Length: 356
Length: 188
Image (spheres, rainbow over the protein chains, first blue to last red):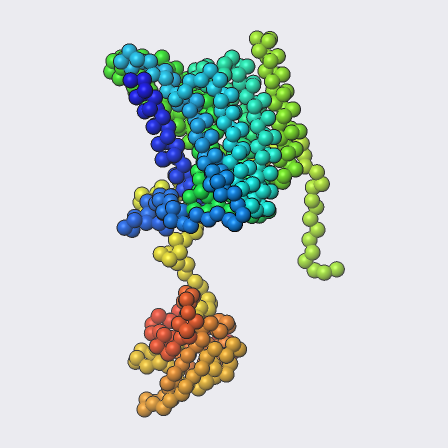
């Protein structure tokens, strides 16, 4: 029975990220950028004349990319070249395992916790896999046997390692406040509206979001890709399905970052001013305990993913608003501003905890 | 000193407010998301009730811009109301054409105009759409249309023959009026 529940949770998250979010985000990105720039956006792909505001474009793209030639350049390391997109795709997907998308519910006397793996080291696990994500670009850039790719890989690795440090130190403030590394406990600690991470760690929120964007190598931190400087960076020599796997990795990373930010700073699955117990007791008056728990669970999942969608929207908006940083500016921001600020954040948090 | 030179004072250094970066980014995000939401809300009545869109971009092949009358598209021959082209094959446009894209083969006819073009070709690949042919024509027989879609895979297909060029007079009324108005002041 436990196995079935776990498998259901895995299947749910997997279909939601790989099956729903990742393909649709490509469409969302095109359409949102169009709206932000007063354009119309993708609307040409149609099936029997129905365009469905361009929603068939992911499908058309998939067909195009599958039927495209899978090109491996001369002199490239074939095994590494093939394996690199997989390496960059897997870590963001795996990191989602510890993100709780709901609290704990009692259904038929069985306690169900809506997280795939409730690890004691939750956040460290996420950082472990975030640092594994560096290998994808580096191997891709090296194995392509191309100067631009190698330059892109170098930039990607330098940038990701620099921001890894700032990101790790930023989050220490969060554990200090909630006293746990477990993401379920951090989530449960934010039941009251004014105990959300954004109120307790406002500086931490901005710094975490900045370094998470830099980890994802999207604009404004896309020197690794930099199409106007180094053609396309580390995935220059990729085509077809392998090329789109890098994009899928990017989109899944957006979702994962949104999930982490929601859990750490925006109250996870909690609705502002309404506690879980109040919700369950309200529904159990009308429908009985089990049904009340199920309804609360569905509401909480909905709330969590609404917040995730909001953060996806925010990241897309930042991506289409801000121009690219220069390479030295990125390094300066990472080492000279974010790192001291995150240390200061730890210090201030410690003093406040000691005094209260 | 040359006319029309403006001296713009540039700020040397950014203020502290600009250097903390986050408020300025938030301002940028506010502007772009304003556009986003205005356009998003503008779309909903358009899709549901087919109202006018807020975005002024057009769905090109389905919706088209209405060009002003002065717009010069490809030159066409006017087909008169009696079903005969107005052209008398005088050859003025052929002489006038700076790109040498018009070639006319005159022929004799029993109609009152006595001459007619047996062959009339415009090599649209050479045409520079200057409108001199229209200006020089004594019979208002060649006019600039509003048609700009001349893209083709083959150069032979944009070598327009007489059949491709003939357009009924009633479709060209607007341009005819414009030409009369524009060239009347020269008193030819």
